[in-house]
Length: 182
Image (cartoon, rainbow, N blue to C red; front, side, top):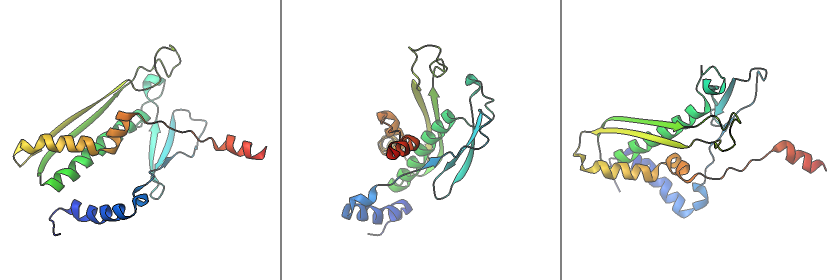
């Protein structure tokens, strides 16, 4: 099947492979922090992608006493959502033949920091809400725009993950090592 879509050209062999071997569709994304300069409580560095190990400096928000001189974890959460949504939008637009001329995706996460500062036990230690602002312009007939946006929402891994609020397992290797020693 000949297609002009680069996204389809790259994804069709993968889809065929995953139909044949569903276990190959499972991937694991990784980020890690190996603490350095531990005497500096307001800065750290996260390495993104175990293979590439792209380093990003991380700071603490001024609302928590930090300097806010580097992206903070909340900024990274917003960046993750915005970048996943926009890249998903691009791929779907290309697949369905929508010529994008402009995209803008802004993610905002809202949190009452009194919870994390342990000031008020009734305030959750979590983002209470998130907003996603999307602006899209196309060269095409805009009647495909609602389809494009709904398909993007349905296919964006980070959007769907945050919407579901998945459980996170904590593996404490120190405790596991201690338990093995007993």
